[in-house]
Length: 206
Image (cartoon, rainbow, N blue to C red; front, side):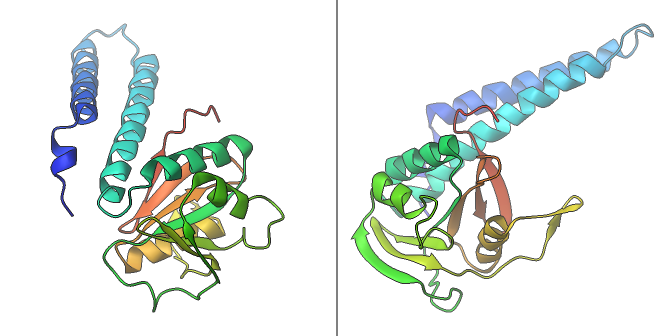
């Protein structure tokens, strides 16, 4: 994949600046520990919140980088998951990259339509018979819906993930595909890539 569009992005500079700020905050906390009357607990919480904010900005930035060479429809995908997040509509969208997925999925219902956020949102509308499976995207096309993906059996902490998240991870463990997930329980958005899940900031307060 060509990363040239990502290397000098203004967002990358913002992320680097905020990482330096966190390092500075941690250094200040380290120095303050010499004061016996100084309590670090409140400051740790602020650093944690700052770090989570950086993590989400970085996830959005790299999500765009990972998708841009393989689809021109990133704005539609972004709008789709934002709208689904706000409406608490669950969904799973797979964007094919270089690897073939034919041997990894159980094919669903062919769609063969141009990718638009409104069509994607309608597929995942509760009650739609296609909404339970994964939608497959190749380039700028919605290839099919209601596809079944391989599930990961990994645990995160002491909790097992829901089916959509396990499917996103399972496919990302076996291919270079990227899988966007919207949780219907929380509205949170994340993406699975190379065997990991990353949070995506949609501007929604959970």
